[in-house]
Image 1 (cartoon, helix red, strand yellow):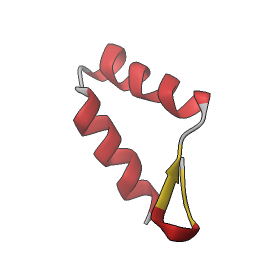
Image 2 (cartoon, rainbow, N blue to C red; image 1 turned 120 degrees about the vertical axis):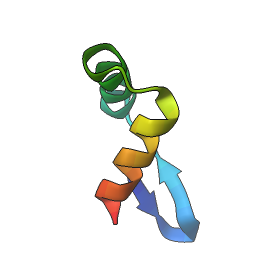
Image 3 (cartoon, helix red, strand yellow; image 1 turned 135 degrees about the horizontal axis):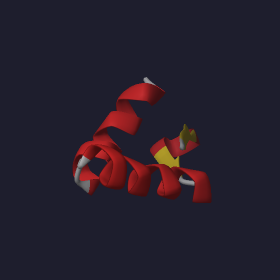
Image 4 (cartoon, rainbow, N blue to C red; image 1 turned 90 degrees about the vertical axis):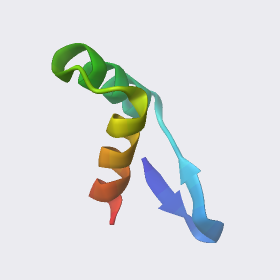
Amino acid sequence: MKVVEGSMLVLSDEDISAFYCYRDRDGWDYRDSFQFQLRLQK
């Protein structure tokens, strides 16, 4: 996941896979895992 010029967010297949991993392993919902990944980008 990365933010590029113009504040556009680019997601890869690995990013989507990570969201499912957070859900299955940690019980996080999509919104929580997405916000966590955004914080990692800052």
